[in-house]
Image (cartoon, rainbow over all chains, first blue to last red; front, side, top):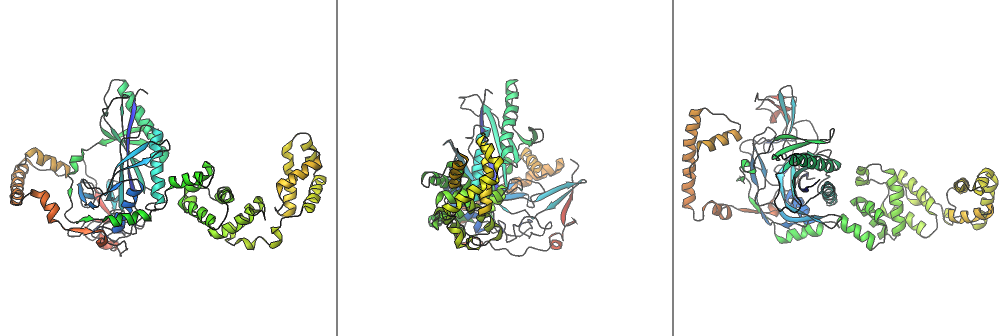
Length: 471
Length: 97
């Protein structure tokens, strides 16, 4: 392709507050239609919206985590458009005084994707179109959102995906949203245009609406870039319009003519007072932020000496990272702690969601007690793994499974006689090892582990076995 | 400031309203009067409407915003009491256009 991709992403994220942005109705997902509603969120005349403090706090958290400047004075605007998902025929949003501005997200390559602004606004209701009727549920109406607008700094499909992925990770980490794209608590709109390399001017852009998975972002960018390139190559011009990405055909198709932003006729909402946040409060929120995943990753690799792959797996989930750090604080070793989490605990968790929730039945301290036994070589790592599995299943502490007599391991004499026994009992395996099928030695390991309940030091056993077999 | 008939037409379209030619003429004249009234207020304030927003409007501080505590919502019957509902939903017949 002879064009350069110029792409920016607008991301809507539902905030995990208990109540809606302007009223005390619950934000709980689901529920019977129109049961989480009141005069404010159904736009009854005379009702007055009152801004939720937590929404402002969460938006500031997002801003700080994305390196933004926080506007300590801000106000709400009305964005006017008529559609039945908006009971008031306007959405309360922010126009010229967003809460946060001018931040960035750093990609792995070191390239920074600018964040233009973050503003707060209310979500709309849900519509069901059926049999010539539209059925409206306003339970979601008034659920708080932040909209994060990036600069058009993204120049490939991969960067688009990485940007969204990092954004999701950070928002989850700071605990302001679960960012589930499939359930709509994170939604991305992608703006995209093409230009000849080196051309300072932007081409005509299109917007791809409501992409609901990270991999679709990448695919949608590729599909739309190809579509635009085909048009430009054929000497055509791009029409500014809203597109839909269809994952079935992996293509983008036009949705409706894009309205100019002027048509929204923004003006300050006279029902809601302008608000101010003092610098002290901003600092207080800043100090409440956890260490962010990329900072953790760097520290795990550079200070703790973890391999990058392991460090990534642990730092990716805030609760896992906390569990890991909790065990280290109890004196467990970095290596064994990390390996047992990634090797054993994660093997019980199939989905991202389970790792995100990290609902383990033992505490970090109980986990550390087990790891330390392995650190001090009182048990071998295999036995630690099987014991950990039992602890996870039962929620019981290590003392329930490891008796004092287990701790010494088994004596060299015992191990030697066991190895002899293993060799005598498995003549075929021994012959196989001798003939070069080295994997057959696993049969002998299995025999010894079974006899000792997993307590034997397998490295020692291997030396003894190889001596006996004559290798 | 005056408003043109085209602008009224545009606003009507955005509001999804349709007017007869006679109504459009009338509204254009009425809108002009409303805007003239607002202009009069505006001129009486030094610095114009920006000034009203910046100085006249009270500010609320972060601490005085609403705390995030759930209060009971209204029962569904109450929410739907002024409209035609269907199975707990608001229901609207889709327009032909």
